Length: 293
Image 1 (tube, helix red, strand yellow):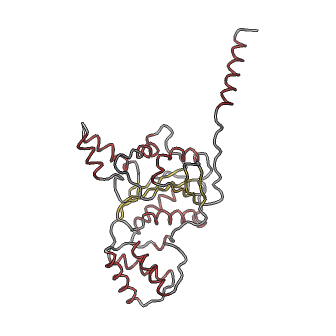
Image 2 (cartoon, helix red, strand yellow):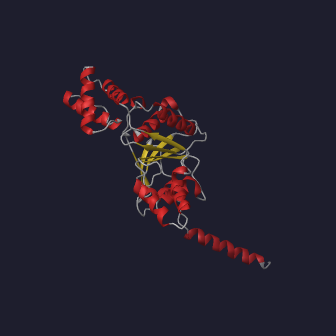
Image 3 (tube, helix red, strand yellow):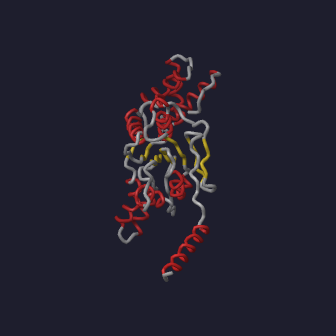
């Protein structure tokens, strides 16, 4: 017997002891039952969504170019090809979150089968952004592709959770899993309140570098899709499309007058305002709508 043999045996025993002490590897969640999930970081679980609250893609009017851009990016990703994280930013009520959900529904449907793995939608709430690394670790080994979706993403005051987002998008050691894209919506182009950027500029030793640190967050989204306030023609096109889709029998002139009066009372024109008018009109006509818009 050599001196190295008992040493080797000791090392092996130590290794086995450490393995027993180490926490077991978390099992990969079961994503087969649904096409969409909500992430709950407290329990590290994904809640299946039986029916996603969305409208059909053809009903999203006045955003044709934006729709085609996000649809093409999502189709490439679902087919196993490179694609970009997307930031949908701009005017309120113009269909940013509706577009994300509608595109997922279109691509994950049978007419657009995925050769890169079935496409799943996972919603993460804004206040849970710091848990993104844990979420990514759980979906990394799953045999599916994922769009991780955060609606109304922005950062205020002393909030530093944006650093977790930056690390996931590009800067972390592990990086973003190949089977995951991040889609986010925001009213702010750079995700940060203007006063945050101004404060960094005024208090930093090198103001330009501090501002670059903040602004670089949105730069890590490879695809920027900007939404702007719609014209009156686009607004009326949305109203007509909804009325036709839901079979609301009303004369076109009456529909237009009602829609314009509704927009004036609200002080804005948008897809959200158009849908709210349609809900009001359907209620007055005693008509049920087969979706929540």
